[in-house]
Image (tube, rainbow, N blue to C red; front, side):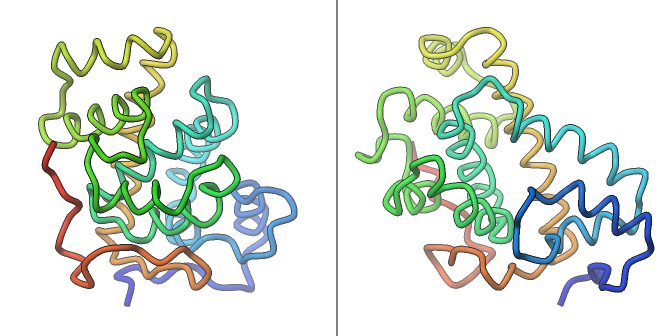
Length: 196
């Protein structure tokens, strides 16, 4: 059970309007539990929405690469909630295969599902997760494939989804009923394979 219960309908008019902004048009699902938890602090939620929406809808990184980063960051953090949401709602839309999604949880940067560019992303996410920095080699590998603006966006994207993982994990947010099932061990305290 979540430590902070997501708000439930009927919502106050301001909350209803704010939650509507978080969800893409035409989505049949209730607003995500994460969004409904964040709206216990409306000011914080409104500030977070701007960055989150900007990264998803207005970024310079290719959508496929963005989703690989999100899946790997959330997998390394053991955030089943956010991993499942993105694996179901965004992964198929951008061309992530089931093999690749599973590899974000159970594989490493050498997994055969990844291209050279994608290996650089996985390696960089793992370095950031483990050390909070990038080695010269990690940076050089990314710089072969991305512009300066995209490199900055990558760093913000990885950090943003680590923040989201902290929130979802910290409040023990339960998975959305429609989210993709998380591959790997049943024990949520076991994190993704860290070997590289």
